[in-house]
Image 1 (cartoon, helix red, strand yellow):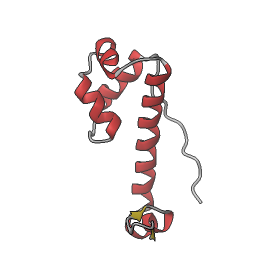
Image 2: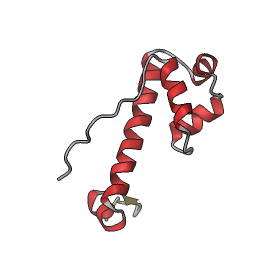
Image 3: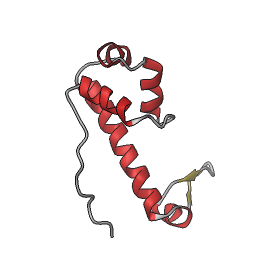
Length: 98
C-alpha cells in the first residue's frame, strides 16, 4: 500500500488484490459505475435530489444514501430512479479482466 505525506493510506490495485477477491472488486467497480452514472445523469438533467424525489416517488434521503453508496437499494428502487430520468438498466457482457 502506498502512503501520502500525511501517512494516510491510499487505495491501490495491489491493496485490492491482497484484501479482496476478483469477484468483490468487480462488484464494487460495477456499483461505483452505476452510482456515478446515476449522479451524472441527474446533474446533466439539472435535477436536484428533491426534484428526483418528486418525479420518481423515491424519497430524497433514500436517493442521498444511494448516491453516497451508503445503501443497498432494491432493484425496483434503482429502476424507479432511472426511469424517472429516462434511463434503464441493461444486461451486457462484462469486459474481459486481465
